[in-house]
Length: 260
Image 1 (cartoon, rainbow, N blue to C red):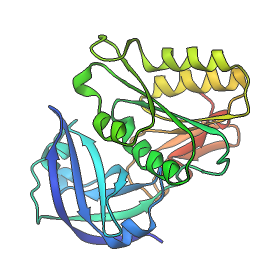
Image 2 (cartoon, one colour; image 1 turned 30 degrees about the horizontal axis):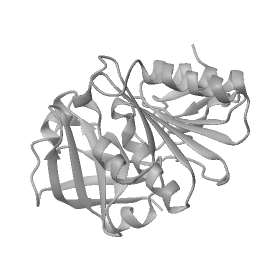
Image 3 (cartoon, rainbow, N blue to C red; image 1 turned 90 degrees about the vertical axis):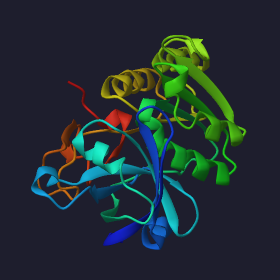
Image 4 (cartoon, helix red, strand yellow; image 1 turned 180 degrees about the vertical axis):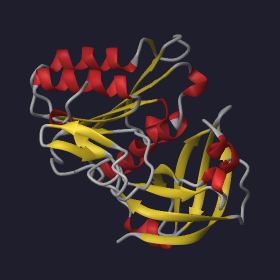
């Protein structure tokens, strides 16, 4: 079920130079959201910010409160970062198709690049509830940009870190570290990849997984306008023709996508 309502902000805390964690009181969304789904937020009721902004559901704090993680990128998110406890936001959600969690006997390889950790943190918590074996691969430009790293450490799961400047973990791109791991295990039916991050990162992961016949689900980060499949602005190429990120995704199977 999809809800549209004015919901109250519980907290809006800065966690890095340009990233924030926003907690929202919404029993409706907190009780129904699934990993990989998103909400569509009206930042303010003005023509300059006419379109809503999409944000992945990052965590369910309890049955009444959910959390999003966002990076200040432009006017909309800059205004959102100024919102205070008690302010209200017009939100539609939960929206989209999330991750399919079926093969609970497979080890989950969860790969995050930068802000791509947002939908994956929800997924990691759900997988942990199922007692599924998990290895996370977390990448960022530097240690200071490793989002939710301490939160993931507290979950006591195996984590492999890659930073481009070498300030923490391997000095490498997270795709390089993952590719080495996948080549080490070869074609193996005991693993499944879940990934979210920049388009080029996902493209590399998709090709590696297809070459080694390892199933993968990718959460795409595209510009979403209407959020409900009407405007057709977020279409992507698949083997079945064009599909919409907001309605058919944002999560797609890697072997279904066609890359330019």
